[in-house]
Length: 135
Ligand SMILES: Nc1ncnc2c1ncn2[C@@H]1O[C@H](COP(=O)(O)OP(=O)(O)OP(=O)(O)O)[C@@H](O)[C@H]1O
Ligand SMILES: [Mg+2]
Image 1 (cartoon, rainbow, N blue to C red):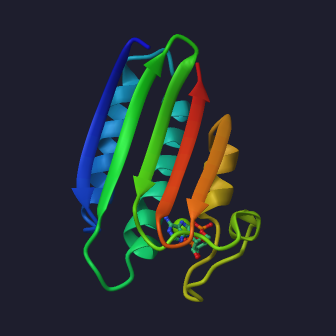
Image 2: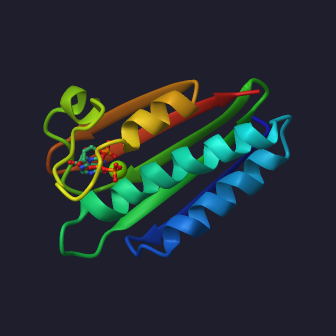
């Protein structure tokens, strides 16, 4: 690993854009194209928005974004300690949402814009979304 960074913040919606800009800046030191950086921004926004919106219904909770620079690309992990996801396969399907005013496309964007997407979750103890974008 060449470099790494951890940012930790509460589930306040304005922090989504801070995390997005931090990830874009972190990624900008690698040989990514402008469109790669745009895709990283969308994927990180979706993962952090999910933690802000879904992880801690009606309560305060912390979110961590861990960024790692590897020779092959960057890895970004978004972690919460919230309510977790009952059925990950179902949650990842395009159009699945537990908030009817939403489109249920966050995981679909993460999957299509990044090279790897790994979701781990335990109901009651939290969710970890790990994404890799290769240079
Ligand atoms: N961090 C999380 N904690 C708890 N549940 C989550 C988390 N992330 C996703 N989910 C669950 O997975 C579902 C699907 O997530 P996805 O991002 O694909 O769609 P959405 O957030 O509902 O809508 P959109 O992202 O289009 O606004 C969510 O509706 C929610 O039930
Ligand atoms: Mg979402």
